Amino acid sequence: MTYTNFKGRHFINTQDWTREELEQLLELAIDMKRQPFRKSLANKSLILLFFNPSLRTRTSFQLGMYQLGGTTVVLNMGLEVWNLEVEEGVVMDGKAAEHIKEAARVFSRYGDMIGVRKFPDLVDWKKEKQDAVIQAFVKWGSVPIINMESHLYHPCQAMADMLTIQEHLGGFKGRKFLLTWAYHPKPLPTSVPNSALLAASKMGMDVVLAHPKGYDLDEDILKAVRENAALNQSSFQIVYTMEEGFQNADIVYAKSWGAPAFYGNWDEEAKLRSELKDWRVTQKRMQLTRNGKFMHCLPVRRNVVVDDEVIDGPNSIVYDEAENRLHVQKAILEAILS
Ligand code: CP
Image (cartoon, rainbow, N blue to C red):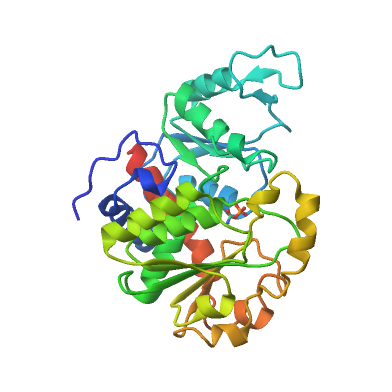
């Protein structure tokens, strides 16, 4: 395969890349899986900034860079590093000791690439939708920036999801991808569902989104999903029961998120949420699918989001999905840096 030159590109959102470019990254990921150790990133360095916890992202990026011959520096922001100010033009007489402008510029002098994980604080959607932290690194840094999950997107997860689907279904066209909301005791961000919908529709799957009334995703994301579906002559549908969504699904992708009308007022959302405990992936519901595969980005709450018999069953592909984080991220790193 002849690859496009991706050198120097940021990886923030799959929407910034064409379908053909994403297909090339998946091809490269398959090659990585066949031949995991290479020296393509010898003498290169990746700085990983974690404003939030991680199991998979941290481990897979660190080991991935090692397997390509490069090195990583991992920093837990706010714990081991100065608190950063993100707003521009403010008087910095509060908690933050350093501005993100300096941090982005200094990290860019040290490393060849920067990975950033920063979840939303779940306080003010209008503000958090600006994705200020990752965008500040794009703006002030001078090396490629990799999104390791931001307020809006989790593109590396979505690419691992697509690789897993390609491996298990053999392709995307004509396959039904169900993204279903599931109960969780706490409101969660929308980065994973946003990126899963964007990637599945971009690759040409028939996408169904199932959620309870009141749990709509952001209209700009839905608009982009509709546009992807139109370009691919595939479909996008929203339904309000799990039973309708599960019908003939090839993929059941479960995730929870908060109700937008209560954004920042989560105590008020608690009552609505507590009535939705039945939104759980069960074997009975899986039987409505077309021998559907179960997917989840992990971490997952067993017997809350999904029953043990589903996640431990033969149609669960969650560990392939987690493993594929390693291979797709190595593909992204090599494509952007070498
Ligand atoms: N799926 C995912 O991003 O896992 P971590 O939060 O453990 O990195």
